[in-house]
Length: 166
Image 1 (cartoon, helix red, strand yellow):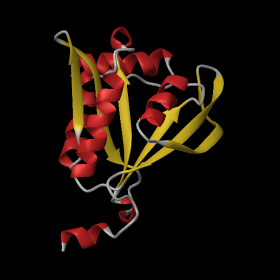
Image 2 (cartoon, one colour):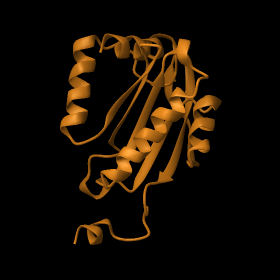
Image 3 (cartoon, helix red, strand yellow):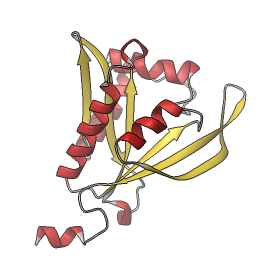
Image 4 (tube, one colour):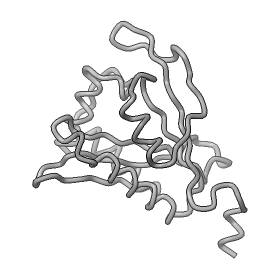
């Protein structure tokens, strides 16, 4: 968890992949991970040469019951391990895991529209841009846009997921 906290902390302190302002400590990151897993969502890690290289997880897109088949993804890769396909491997594993759990839509909320690497990663794995919210976040003394992208999981909205349970 210390390595995950360090990867995330870089984005809190100097990046815009998250709009969080105050760096959480290891105990808080552990609490967050345990809450995600306890709610039935996947939390994945990737190693590269024996070091934690990145992590990914899914959470509820929104709290209301009608959104229960839609998840939001999060993927972070340590700067020293970027460009090696780790982000793509994590995101693909997350897509597969969420599909197996019966989720039907995945949303990516990309902090800062200029984050071309994240946008391209999501596009390569079947996401399409559905919205760009201009100037909805403020960090490091500037206004930030946010891109929302969407990808169907499994049959998406082609049929009622509850029919599959019957």
